[in-house]
Image (tube, rainbow, N blue to C red; front, side):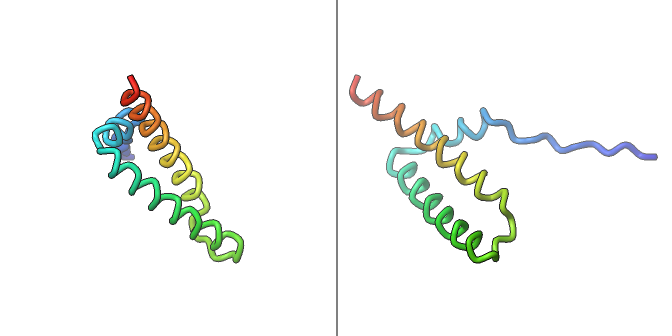
Length: 79
């Protein structure tokens, strides 16, 4: 039997690193897009047409990461 090797998973730190490099406007746009997609997925869930329920969780977490970075930018701007 040949052993299967797993591809390296993308870590949280690299996701956060990518998000931290974006400007405030880009972050706000990305957050709006995520919320719009989340709304669409919630509608699909209610109507029973949602194909990937795990996507809702992924979107919520991505939105939280972006909100955290935006909050840090606002605190830094005040200082």
